[in-house]
Image 1 (cartoon, rainbow, N blue to C red):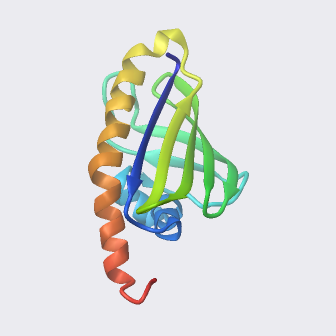
Image 2 (cartoon, rainbow, N blue to C red; image 1 turned 90 degrees about the horizontal axis):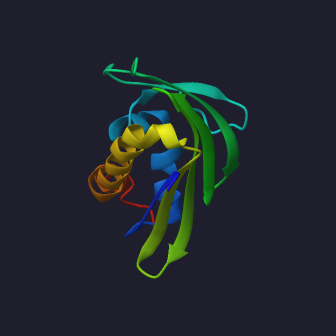
Image 3 (spheres, rainbow, N blue to C red; image 1 turned 180 degrees about the vertical axis):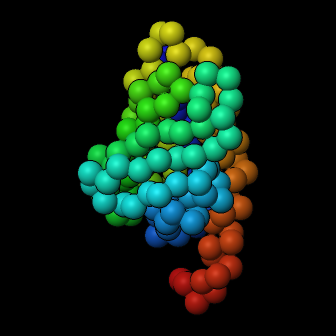
Length: 142
């Protein structure tokens, strides 16, 4: 498999998930420090601690923005050059968030395993915590 794909239904409206996915300060809470802007063509970086074979920088470029249902950007760093896509779909009980990262080469087995586990943890723990914090700050939101 040359891709990672994970989905989860979260008990929040798409607009709150969209904020978590497109606000630079929110993204830092669940992913990495960044200079993201939800503008097609915007080049940005994710920054984290270096690790063996990875300088801690992921170079990205926004390729699609369709609020509040689709966000896509390139992801290049640590020997990989892929595309990350977030799809939001309203469903009973909230919004289904799907994260897909495609374009891994056969030689990218270890990064794909590490990133796959990371995306699972992000969807299970980190994004729900960020969404709860956003929702608490918007008590009038309904």
